[in-house]
Image 1 (cartoon, helix red, strand yellow):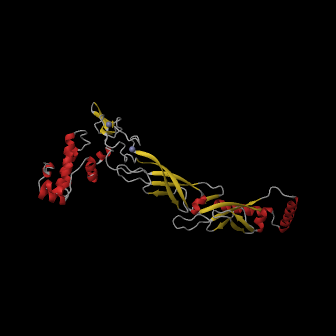
Image 2: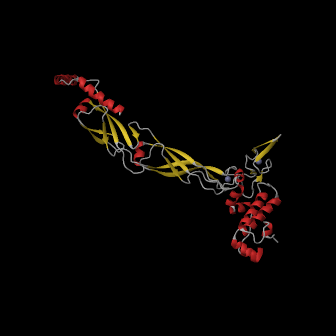
Image 3: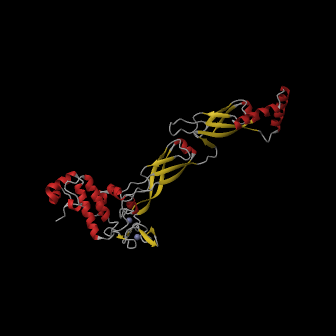
Length: 372
Ligand SMILES: [Zn+2]
Ligand SMILES: [Zn+2]
């Protein structure tokens, strides 16, 4: 015949919810398996108190128990607890509240969230302009399916570590001081696996390569981070998986340089084209484009191709391609070219607007560009 629940928790039949909780806390702390490793008697008392609390904290169960006793509860299908796992999963949040940091010192219990992972992804300028779906191969640890992450064969529960009696810590006393350190025998776990799972050799985790398809939005830039919720490592004992952080690295381009959503490009034009003006074809990230070079352009002047930059990730509005023009002075001349240039030079002299004037204009222009 099971003992009376009120008697177990040492409360009156009129006890309030708070009184019941308070007394259960007292007994749970006293008989907690972590504090009494291997002690069968406190194990039983812990289970008994937990069962009493499970009934008395629930107004409906409590009413049935008050009226019909233990027999009445059996009629509702209530069976008490089969073991510690049962108790801990039922009272998870209460134990968190009761034991605070003590529970964290015993990592073999509550659910733990999986670790976050970081993945560095290199993206080309072309991919960043148009966006891309990439398939990532992520090496990560997942719970071993053979043992469901427990690390041991079923039917062979881990034993209490004999070196630390399950505390996970060993205490050395030296004079007035006591120094505690992590138990080296069980590496702080407090439990030892006697029959490790064949699949994961006791780790509870196996490395797997998971394929994840990720949509890289158009316009991403160097250093952008993307969070993929739940794609990190799997949690322990039913805890949620961590997140995956994708960090974008923009691969340097040999022709273009990105500034914000604009892309800068250097273009050399011949002396003649600079003087006469004309159309040229230049590369952009969106394919080749016709660029109209106005007559009389100088080194250092900029021409704009609107909408040929990167789209903004937020607004989608496109930046520009900024073309930096450089006028190329020919180093080798054919006799005919030389003849024409000499003639050109003569005319310039006669106009009274010689080489000096041209030189001054060009340097003024460069200064403007460099110091603005
Ligand atoms: Zn396993
Ligand atoms: Zn130990």
